[in-house]
Length: 202
Ligand code: ZN
Image (cartoon, rainbow, N blue to C red; front, side):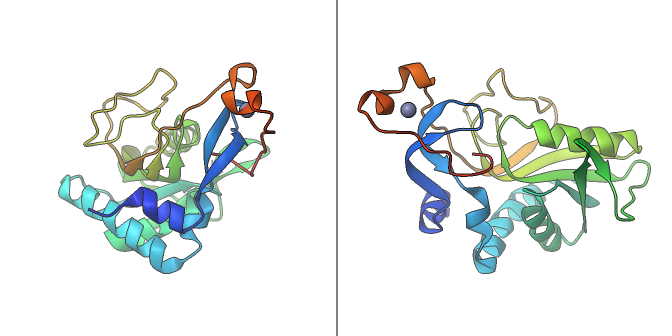
């Protein structure tokens, strides 16, 4: 089994220091997910491992749909390896939509793919769009799981923040559960260190 955490570290995608997360909490670790896909060979290797899990589960997928922007590269590479169609939904004036001539058929089996699933909010917005058009979301997938949701094969249970439905499988390569602190209680702040915000999503 590949060491996914080491792959993220080697790619500069798993940062260590003192960070402000998108939730406003502080942490000593931060995932800069896009960095792991910077090397197409690495992206191919990670998506291959994810595709293998999905194939072995016996689930049937017609199409991979990713929420833009974060999920697009992972979704495309996963679709390539599953031998299925790749589409994405994107925000227009804040609302997720299927655009650019992409269509889904009634009953089409869709896997919603992200680079990382945090609480699953974007994945569920994508799901609402897809199911509103009559297709069926049969699974979720992400390269990395921030540990709020329970991935297939993991004993770590979902936290209350997880928005993914319990009865739909969620495939991910690794759990990245970080220690998180409110700014008031952050032990790193207490040492006089200043938290930084590294970029979008973490
Ligand atoms: Zn802090």
